Image (cartoon, rainbow, N blue to C red; front, side, top):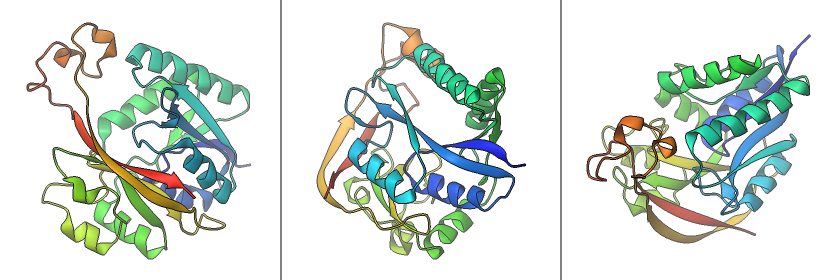
Length: 249
């Protein structure tokens, strides 16, 4: 009997490819997507995608969606407690497994596994340790289509946001940037491919540069406690991103 499984859906290409692969595995039944959204902005967390496009996307995929609302200024303790509550709710609905699209970040994988173990849910990683060049080539060959919605401004300039993921995009990436953006170099919105009943229609809006400063008042708001009270020039986490606003049609 297959495991009742939910999928942690980011709206991006790694999620799409991982979902495509896990749906072909008879050991799992995927009947729910789970996405965190920024309740202050009505957008998908990290990606900056409008909720309307998220809803259109999952409607075209045909799997029910559960959203978890979080403030854009959420602390780690609040994030953990909110996510734990949501995972307990899913566990009470009979879900025994959860799927992620992570590829090679060991600390993130460990974090997810530990948090899920607390509620008795097992984690699955269909893309784990697969070469990212092979993954992006597979993604394109399968007919998936995606566009970049945010890029790390420290590594990529404005020209890389709002671009279709194709061979030219890959060829243009600077040395040291992972072709799947696994280190957070860029995030994408998948709008067509083998998972979709029909493409998601949208038009490209404005591109904006947003800069985030580390908090200097409360360690609880920091993802890396040892950097909380450092000057912005000293922090190692990324603070500046280009976003491309996609508009529903």
